[in-house]
Image 1 (cartoon, rainbow, N blue to C red):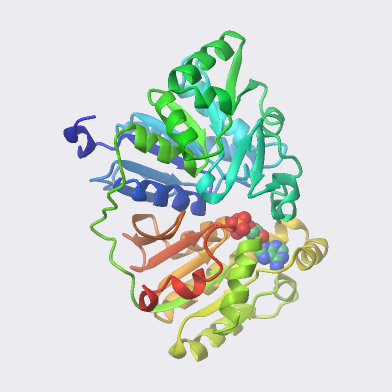
Image 2: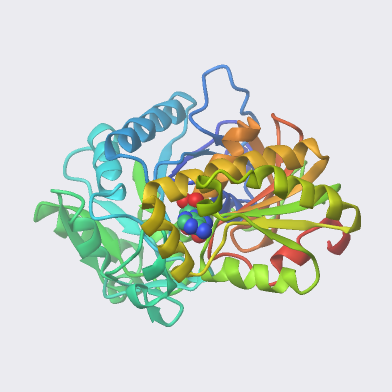
Length: 428
Ligand code: ADP
C-alpha cells in the first residue's frame, strides 16, 4: 500500500455498529492502529461533513430493537457509507455475540449480504477479540476462560447468552447455511483460509465462523478478507484489516487532547466489570442509585439525582447508576416487565445526563451500550472525533455537535476496575 493511499481523504472502511459503545470499541482499535476515525451517531445525512478520515463508524442502536427496524437502519447506514466512497463495509457486533434467538445479527447480515455481496461469496463471522479476552475455538466462544454461557453474560438484562456455539447461535437467526473454519486452517495462512472459503462456498455455505485465538489469527484473517465487500465481527478483526492495509499503529488525532472540566459517570450497565468499577469508585467518591421501580411509583428520582450531583460536584467526579445485581434486576423486571424496566431506566439516565451537562459537566463517562444510545440521543450529539484510548476499546470522544463534551462510551464489560477514577484529566 502506498503512502498516498494511506493518507488519502477518501475513507476506505465503513463500519456499521449495532450499539454505541461497540462503535467506540471499534473506534479505539482503529485509532490505536494509526487510523483517522470519525464516528457518527445514527445514519449520517448527506450534508454532514465527515472529512479527513480513513474510516467512518456509524453507531446505531439496533441490537435490541425489532428485527425490521434493525435491518432498515443498517441498510440505510450501509448505503450512506457507500455513497461516501467506502470500499469495504464492516458490520460490528459485540465480541460476546449479544443477541436473542431472533437476531438481530443474522437478519442484518443477511440484508447486507443481499445488497452488497456477490452470490457465492462467503461472509466471515468473527466475534473473537483476544485483546478483550474473547476467543473462538472450534466455533465456541469464550469470555476469558469461561464458556460464554457460563460467563456473566448469562445474566445480561436484555440479551442473556445461554449458548456458546457461534455457528448454532447464528444458524438460529438465518436460513443461510453457516459453516466453520478451524484455527489450524487460519494458522496455515491467508491463502489456506481463502481456499476454505471457496470450498465452503461450493457447498452452498454463506457464512463462515472463523476460530480466532490470538491477534496473529486476526491479522491472517484480515489479509484473507481484504477484498471482501462485507466483513462481520467484533472489534478484533478491524485491527487485522487495518494491519493488512498497512496501518502499523501511529496513534494520531488532531483532537486527541486530554479532556478537561467537571466530570461525572452515568451507568446503566449491569455487567460484571461495570459493577467492579462502581465498587472501586464508591470507595473514594459518592454514588447515587437510580431505582426503576421507585421511578415507576412516581418518585422524582431524576431531580434527586441532580441535587446529589450539584451538592457533590465541587469536590470531584460523581457517579449516578441504575446498575444492580442480577437478583435486583430480576426483581425490577418481574414488577415492571423487561422492556418497561429498560425503558424507564434509559429514559431517566438520559435525562440525568442532560441535567449534568446543564450543571457544567464537560467530561462524561457513560457505561452501557443501550444506555449510551439513550444518552447520546438525548444530548443531541451526532458526530465525534475519536481521541485518546483510556484502555482497550474505551476511547474518549470529542463531540463535534451538541454541548461540546468529552464523552467516553463504555461497553459493559470493558475497561479496568479503576476506570471511573483514572480516566479523567487530573489523572491523565
Ligand atoms: P451493557 O453494555 O452492560 O450491555 P446496556 O446499557 O447495553 O449495558 O444494557 C443494560 C440494560 O439494562 C439497559 O437497557 C438498562 O436500561 C437496563 N437496566 C439497567 N439497570 C437496570 C435495573 N436496575 N433494572 C432493570 N433494568 C436495568
